Image (tube, rainbow, N blue to C red; front, side, top):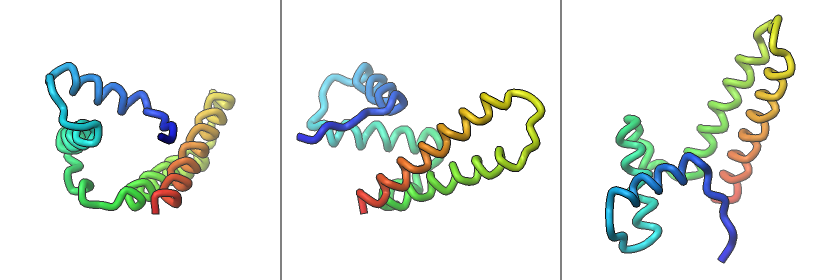
Length: 104
């Protein structure tokens, strides 16, 4: 079985759901239930029927927009922090796009 990295956010969502319920028929069912509840809670239920690759590409596009917004501002303070944030955002965008290609 290939190794996967579970993000901290997903881990918290899974943990909260497991703590509230006793039985799960499968890991897939557990993850689907948790993600569906998360989407409903954040008014994103329409994204359930969107292919994962499309959702990842849209996320990458959103990150790109944030990077471009940050890049256009003339920052007088916090130069190193801004640069670090841009680096993290660029890495996140790359990961989202790479994963979208691999899923497709």
